[in-house]
Image 1 (tube, chains in turn orange, red):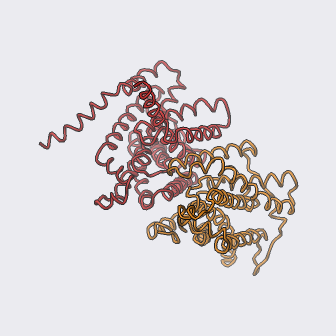
Image 2 (cartoon, each protein chain N blue to C red):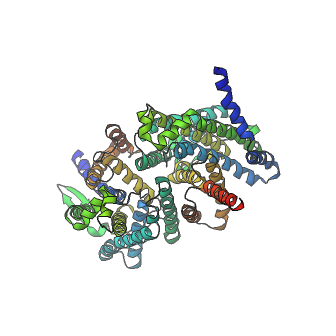
Image 3 (cartoon, one colour):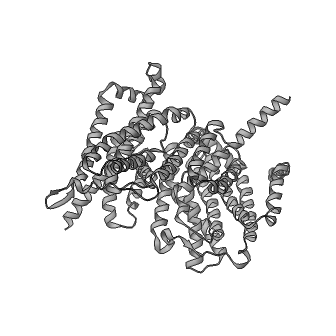
Amino acid sequence: MAFSVIGLQLVSALVSATFLFLMASGLSLIFGVCRVLNLAHGSFFMLGAFLAYSVTQVVSSSLETFWLALLLVPLATALLGALLEIVLIRRFYGANLLVQLMPMVALIYIISDFSRFVWGVSPGSVPVLGLFGTVSILDLTFPAYYFVVVLASMVVAAGLWFLITRTRWGILVRAASQDREMSAACGVNQTRLFTMVYALATGLAGLAGVLAVPISGASLEMDMTTVVNAFVVVVVGGMGSVLGSMLAAILIGLVNAFGILVLPQFEMTFVYALMALVLIVRPTGLFGRG
Amino acid sequence: MQKETEMVPSLTWLQKLAGHPLLWGLVALLLLCPPFLPQTYVVQMTDTLLFVLLAVSINLLIGYGGMISLGHAAYFAIGGYTAGVLVTQAGMPMLVGLLAGPLAAALAAAVIGLFCVRVANAYFIMLTLAFGQLVYTVVWKWRALTGGDDGLVGVAPPAILLSEIHYYYFTLVIILACLVLIHRICESPFGTTLKAIRDTPSRARSIGIDVAGFKLAAFTMAGLFAGIAGSLYVFHNRGIFPQSALWVTSTDIMLMAVLGGANHFVGPIVGAIFLKTLNFVIPRLTEYWLFFLGVVVLLIAFVMPRGLMDGYDSLRARLKRMRG
């Protein structure tokens, strides 16, 4: 009995770590390269979830459609991210933190009401969880979809690692995040690089949204709840470190999954306690620079 | 000798105030108008006054301390819920609620601030937002105490304050006193030290200023004043809902300070009145108030990113140049 509980919580910890990682790594990337706090990151997550809901509503709620949504929706949110970066966000790169916050809060408000206008207040669901079937490991049965989610995030993590450490583009990203002026002086097209980074990160947020929708559905509150959880991951892991985001996401997923067994009413208590502890010991986060 | 140095600043302070006819005009308007206004407007004015205090108190952090808090609604809600719970569940008189609410908010701010002041800039924003959402979750889930999403209802002031106009004047006196007090704090050596820390934290530290201590003190004070607004709100509104602690209340308070102009003492007052007036008018015209507000914020961010007061100042300077 105890074993099955532990196994179940482990898997759900991994699943929640997936979403946390996809969100936190994007936030980290944007902050590292573009130097803005992308407060509206959760709005792209929510849009991803709602768009996936729409795709399955319009076509059919079959597995094929879901795969289609998984492919198309992140592209759509990335495109929207690129567009917003070009017309809006980039005009505030040089401004101080306070002024940068204004377009971010405005975006959150606008996307929130836009979603309410298009999709209404009642949450949408995509019933594909059952279509994936189940997987049994050592007498424990899990929805096979959980493993799809974890696998997808592993592919993304490996892809991100390859992109950042093994490609020319990754070198440019790292150069821009370490010394923006110097990389500009060396002739790197910063404007295009920033747009691409913003698009990549918002694409990841959209992907997380699509992946989340069969489990938690799409709702109007998910934008801020998700981004706040991602903030906690970033504070614990350290800003600007993708590896830190990943390890912190797993750590927080675990703390949350097992904390819920002890204090079911206040699931986040232990996560905040962990965050407080990290802040006392290492204010820059476990893997943060400086 | 010592007496003289004590007397001089307080005199200049009074003189400074006396030299602002516009300010006195506004106060006279606030004092004289309400008896001639319909009740809805009086209720709206009381509500606006409370948010003026919230905006001015958050500006102690944003404008003077350079600490951008996105969790100020937490202290507003803690003040409100503490006062409300004491009155409804413990049967305490209103005065106890009005005293305990702000104290509880200040205590919470001191504890949360302990962690938040260790970091700066973007980290500070993320942390205050995260702690704000924690308070929201606790308020929302602790049904036995707070009533959960049904809210805490039936919080009534004593008979003499039941009429909207009486409560308006009661609020006005307290809010004005708080504003004068916050103004004194901003102009005091404490406020100046805070500005020094905001501008160059490393230099402030090197001349021996306890940077974290000053920041924590400012954070606690801002929490205290937010708690005063919260405990006044719960009696005005006859209750309080978890929504009061939600992030959107925090971003609204932040926007009031920033849209009005965070580098002015009166900026947040202007911002709060501006936003509250919009909030009074617009929802009658469209269901999509947040969308509208987002567009307004974008416009201001492009046209006068340092706020309405700054826009007013530069406009006045330009007029002066044109004339002379």
